[in-house]
Image 1 (cartoon, rainbow, N blue to C red):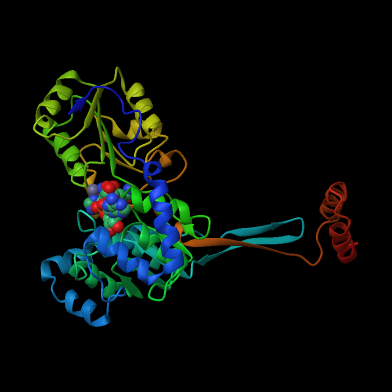
Image 2: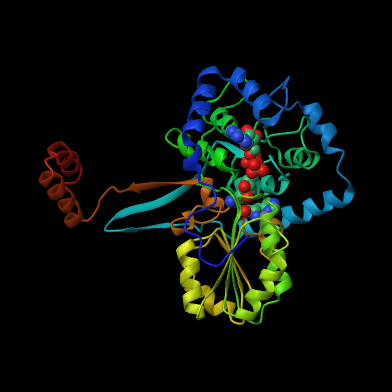
Length: 396
Ligand SMILES: NC(=O)c1ccc[n+]([C@@H]2O[C@H](COP(=O)([O-])OP(=O)(O)OC[C@H]3O[C@@H](n4cnc5c(N)ncnc54)[C@H](O)[C@@H]3O)[C@@H](O)[C@H]2O)c1
Ligand SMILES: N[C@H](CO)Cc1c[nH]c[nH+]1
Ligand SMILES: [Zn+2]
């Protein structure tokens, strides 16, 4: 179905399932493994003997991938590492008025990664989350992913290759609750990252009062801005491609050309899912529309993508010109774990900064007198006389 207006809302929002998910999260928190086993049978149709994947299963499944896939994974590991290494924070800090100040970046100790696996397989997501985590120095990574019985061979291979500590055969809200609160089989973590459907994201939202989360990365979103230089076949391919994730994907074409819009619509009409196709009067208006949607993926298939890039305010990741958005999903370097539901208004995709914490410090034996007095004055103004005394006793 083609809709010739901008989307007003996302196709499915996690608010629609919050009540249901809350029950699952609380049940797992209370009953642990028993609840995990029940929900996995109910939602994934799998009777689990063991929640944690054994080392033997990981080793045996790893061996099932062929050389071609193994080489592809190695090339992608290299590419992602290079990108994330290029974003490492420089040494920061300095001093003023006799105070030495600085910042120390420390990795999160125990990290949980959710790797989706309901409708499709996502070993690529395991790479996208674990590589920046490892570059950032995270030592213990725990992975939850729904299975069809045995662990997927590529996920098993990557887990071995990257030294993932434990892998659990659980998905959905129950997996998020288990990582957040711990069960007999599942290790409690400090932070949970990773994309997934609305159940997964609603659960992340609910547990975020107790553990860190990376944000909301729900059903895939793609907005393309195209002009008459774009290839209608590529445009349709890109929309179809992100539609592969499921019916909840939000797919939007903002066209500066009536002819291109019509040609793409012709191609899309063979599909029975929702596409939004709208015309914009000029590039400025097209970018305004995109900024308002604040999509996960933004593709600028126009003559002057670099100029347009400067006007982009809200997007998870942007591909320029003919670059296919799917290259971000697999092998460009930047992350495919990206904010959805308009969250790109205030956050970006996953980077090493999701895995390190800044710990600031200050040190001084003889600060400048005016600075000392400024602190004492403000402390007294606030009524914190002992704060003031603790400063003046040292330095006055
Ligand atoms: N934004 C991003 O960065 C990004 C990246 C990759 C994938 N994605 C998105 O991740 C999603 C993956 O979704 P998926 O469903 O294939 O896999 P998933 O692993 O996210 O979800 C599967 C789990 O959902 C739970 N579930 C399914 N139906 C349920 C129901 N009726 N009630 C309660 N729980 C239920 C089950 O527990 C199941 O294990 C897609 O929407 C895709 O677009 C987003
Ligand atoms: N497009 C997804 C992010 O929304 C990422 C992905 C993984 N595999 C294929 N695509
Ligand atoms: Zn994709």
